[in-house]
Length: 335
Image 1: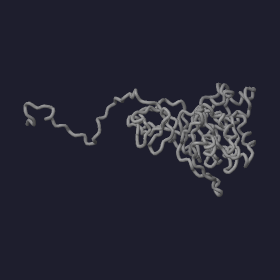
Image 2 (image 1 turned 180 degrees about the vertical axis):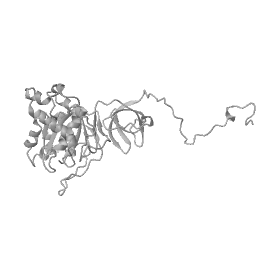
Image 3 (image 1 turned 135 degrees about the horizontal axis):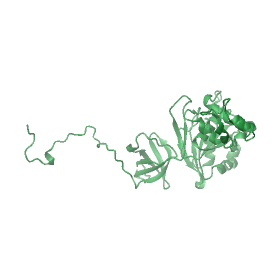
């Protein structure tokens, strides 16, 4: 039976309505060639704070990005209202290729990776010499993560007025990790901040550390115009309270670099780390692996590194340090 007359036009044709009220899906994605480039400063409940040409704008992730995550340090392309005015919202439509990614897992048996920051160049491992006590296993894990991510590590020891630094520094002497020792008095008068700032100039540095080690106090000394809340260490548990709840990128004075403050961590899982990449941080040992058996763990009787060291090509303490770091993946921080 004919539903329409002989001479129908488009207005006469019945069209089934789209129940969801959205546009039909398409595999063609807009290129957004006119998008502006910026850097993600922080992520707060799905809202991205992005620096574009000196202005901080608020944006949300565009639907076409799908499940691709956007983190602090990402270089992104943004469209929409870029005025930075109150109650305006732009869209992040593209995430540029990352030069580095610092990841961690909740524990070594947790396969879910959490991206801490992107595009950093240096990892500052902040550790208190006392109150709370230093945790060498956590330092080792952060070093492994730095070597795996291609970041240069920097050891920052705080509260030297409460305990000496010599013993802890001796543990990492053979790794050749640069370090800075600070205390509260030197941070107050600016002397310690200047020493740390010299290590950060013209670089993007992410600060990682256990809660209560003085990480945010140090960041406040480095960027005094952007004070962040600080807390105290619990006298009973010896643990600090989380005062930083989200990562935040801050420019150093005179735009001479960036510091990224991150929430305090109580664990640093290494499930995602390929142990074979850690050896790249030991250029004096790496040539010796040519004689290793396939899939060598570098801590077994057939490992060629023992003979390499015995022949005088490297310091035995360096091999010990490598094996200690590789073993951190099988040990928990408190062991």
